[in-house]
Image 1 (spheres, rainbow, N blue to C red):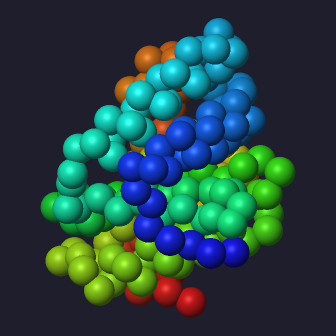
Image 2: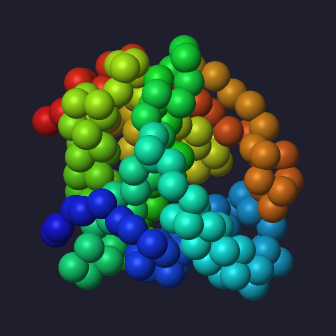
Length: 171
């Protein structure tokens, strides 16, 4: 499977993957009314706007041919934790096939060559047991907990998963 940097032409594809992933993985977390309808337009607007606004610290990777997953990272976003995995979503029917791991390792190699800070972190819903298990299998450790800012999450708990050095993810 090809992994490449995404661009504005990929916004609709990324929004569709995002919707499918949230509807599956967060069915017990996000408001069902949101997942049934508004999510599609909201995610399309979100990704179109994100790509329309240049940010040299942001890279979006797309596992393509056929589109299966995407990952968005921000280089050196946090003075303590380093770079941020802002999104990592795999189509539900393709989970467990190594696509997410390949994206994580691709991003780690990318960040290792560009980031000033060695660390990498992300937020995952505590209720997303499969996601948390995946990140732990890749060496991530829970370092913090908070409340999600996503309105449709209705105050669900999120956990900060950290890798002190992205080099640990390069395989």
